[in-house]
Image 1 (cartoon, rainbow, N blue to C red):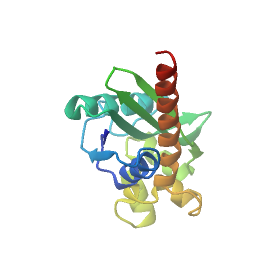
Image 2: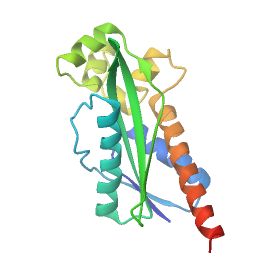
Image 3: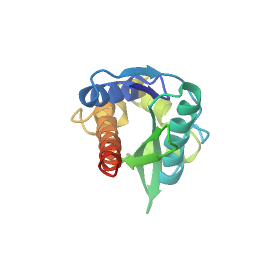
Image 4: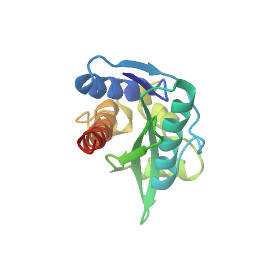
Length: 177
């Protein structure tokens, strides 16, 4: 089985590898850069979800893999509080696209203020933590949960939701034949 993910982000690729190889141990996994076709900093659950779907579809077009994943992080403001939101999608060769969301957590107002003026969360977090490429490692969730959850682990939950839905779909199709 050939599986591809539309990113080179280490946390996202690691999440797909950890979950997919657990359930499909003989899978071949490829990671490629594809466009999300949304803002660099998605600013709603809807836009973040669409970015994940677009990445999954764009990856399918480029790789023709059996399953392709798109994972997208964004932000969404609810009643004056800025939340980090995360979405994933999987595309199948038959055109089916399944999406699921994951953890959402409040960001400190000092971070939210910078997002509201058009900055992107990754670079904001690099400055905030005096680190480089935090989005490839623990991410904002790792910082603001004091290391209890990192970005890879958070995306693993989404990938597990997606793989479970694919497995359900495949079993249902097998039982109907």
